[in-house]
Amino acid sequence: MRFTLDKNIDYLPADELENLQVDLLKKHLRYTLANSPFYKDKFSEKDIASISKLSDLSKFTKTSKKDLADCNSDFLSISKRDVVEYVTTSGTTGKPVSIALSKNDLDRLAYNEARSLEIADFTADDTVQITTTLDKCFMAGMAYYLGLTKIGAAVIRAGQGTPEFHWEMIKQINPTALIAVPSFLQKLGANSSSIQHQITKALCIGEPLRNADFSDNQLTKNIAEHWHLDLRSTYASTEMATAFTECQEKQGGHLLPELIILEILDVNGNEVADGELGEVTVTPLGIEAMPLVRFQTGDLARKHSKTCACGRITPRLGPIEGRLAQMIKLKGTTIYPTQIEEVLHLHPTASPYLIEIDQDENGLDSVSIILPETCTEAESNSLLIDLQAKLRVKPNLKISSISAIQKLLFRGNSRKPKKIIDNRNA
Image (cartoon, rainbow, N blue to C red; front, side, top):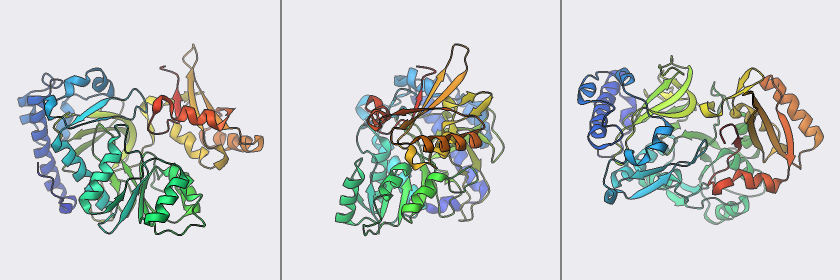
């Protein structure tokens, strides 16, 4: 596949778009069947030939994160001498898993990010400061760099660092845009009031900016208190190597039809109705080294297929509302850490924090929120009231030193903060 930027594909009539995706899907499945040891017995050429519409993909086996972890080497579909890069998953809900890439996969990754950046209205006129890690086998940092250079933007590869470090870079080079995790953007903005800068926009990763109805969530509102930026959300994972990115309408991340097939499935593996919550399940197209079929991300979100006000026909993926592996049953109520975090973002003194999940011998879940010692009793009580009102249940609160919390946030030499400690499967 030649990766030449073509924005017109997003505006194709729905039937032409589906025909294109069906053709690309068949090509992907044939390549996977011929080259992947893992999938060689999972389906046949006859199964592929029977596909006439995207919904026919439901007849194929799903691939779990456990499959990828337990049979990792069986997914490699090229010779080792043709591997040019190894990256790893973040290990948010388990151990990091290695993913191999070919030269063509790197070209695809650059194309993917260039397409996403253009949807987010980044241009060749921009100078962009990357504040996420660019080492530790992190795919996203590399993808942003490749995509930015592909669209002709200038890049400041600042990587992870303190707010003070990033402001020094900003004062020195005057970027027009940032790529950042929203919670870090909030921290960075808290120090911005007395500093002149030219930053007008930011592409945000790792944390949602919107609620399920696309209204701004509390974290986005907190950022707006410090500076006025055009914030766009982007969602991806190492396994899918493809991003869903917001346009100017901010009504979900647009699917890139030439790069990925999206399904939203219920607990029984059936596709849910448009706009309903389910598990994000993806089939990335055009991958050479480690192709995947119906990969279950474990993330919960909604698909929106109505034509966007921007004119694009492509479906959009709503914000991640939770992770299946992190579902909590607390006193009969089902909650997710993301709901707890939305309340925590109302209380600036509650940062940094950790959410610890345990289970007793009867299989009952319990939740403790670990707060910094700088959070006063009055502030803790106010937080408990808000948690009770929002969740209808009251987690436990614990106090710890900031240094102890920071150490746990980056446990295991993690490249990004792990705010959830789930002891149930430890």
